[in-house]
View 1 (cartoon, rainbow, N blue to C red):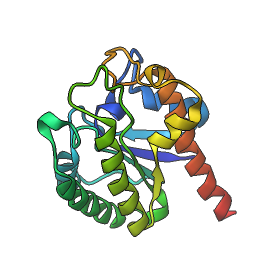
View 2: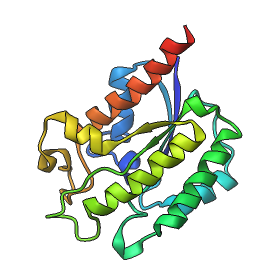
View 3: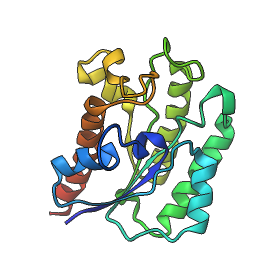
View 4: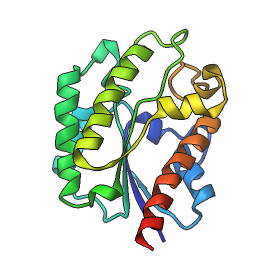
Length: 195
């Protein structure tokens, strides 16, 4: 039995036509026994997540996946890179008080379709991803780069970024499947180590 705690913004919270968050559905297809506690909140940035972690006692879980950054890098409400970095370090430190490093995974913001996204650019996605990768390395957590995931998927960006909103950021089933696969890969890689 696995249990996973999901923290983040609308990319984890969106139902996309499902009866529960789409990522929950995609994960359960691959790991039918998984217990998911999805605490993601649409519109949240790293400051909001920090507040949640300082206030709430989180459920005991085997895994914590943190998917935050798409709102931090949005130019109309930007959390500057240095602040994002500081917030992430505090988020990981707080999580490590309850969960082991090898049970924590940071997920980078996804590439965007710039023809539909007025406030986000792939230049900024790359910059914020670098910070995430660095924090993950410094604290010994797992890391999923959605830039790499998108590039290696074989699908065009327009398809990967297409969801019900069709705004170039909020993706649909195809990308939720890809993301769930990456998450399960990490869970399974740790399991192999423990045998």
